[in-house]
Amino acid sequence: MLKEYLSITKPGIIVGNLISVLAGYFLAAKSEPVTLSLLLFTMLGVALVIASGCVINNIFDRDIDFKMSRTQNRTMVQGGIKVDHAFLYALVMLLAGTGLLYKMANPLSAVMVLLGYVFYVFFYTMWYKRTSVYGTLVGSVSGAIPPLVGYLAVTNYISFEAVLLFSLFCLWQMPHSYAIAMFRMQDYEEAGIPVLPVVKGIQRARQHMMAYVVAFSLVAFGLYTFGHTGYEYLAVAALSCFAWSKVTFRSMDESNYIQWSKSVFKTSLLVVMAFSSVLGLELIPLSVL
Image (cartoon, rainbow, N blue to C red; front, side, top):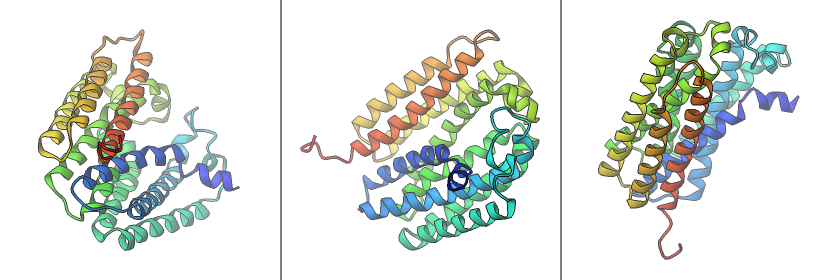
């Protein structure tokens, strides 16, 4: 039973978002004093709120998960956990996560994580995901909140640097999510989810993905120009953006779109890990290295 309760929190999604929390925290730590306890409490608070959102997603998506071969064996679909028990589970984690951020970080970070929760649960899961091709764009807003919360937990104010960070992760979400939608297009078609590759076709999706990768690269360099990043960040950003652009701008057609989209997806994961890692490494004094 414990394993089932853990599975509906989608641990993989939690880990992925915590990596982006580190990016925001490390970026803010370049200009503000930080403590290890603040980092741990921030990550725990964000993890609990994300887990709560994922549980609500599992509850609400039972009907479409049943139609998709990839998700039809999920615990909520099979009735392994009662809906009212799952809802209470989600509520407790939401209250615990926001309360932890409010008390151990600051009220602004708690408000921001709640805003991300609203976008994910209400606007994305319950509305746009099922009805509009713009669902991915709405979801990208909630996906860009964790790094912003990591930043605000340290600074307690929204700066231009924070806006760039938020924009960077919003833009990152788009080609990353479209790539998933492309190599799982059959599942989305069967569930009736109007993602861009299904509605407009793979070539239109590819055009959007290329545009988003270019925009991501511009904002990444803008973060160096207007933020507190160093030459190490610039080098990693240049290499990462070049690699992602190279993969995304490759030719693609009906014969290789699955392989192409998986390459874009895998590269996007390497990009976000590279950005988060270099921001942390820049905090280490050169004398230690």
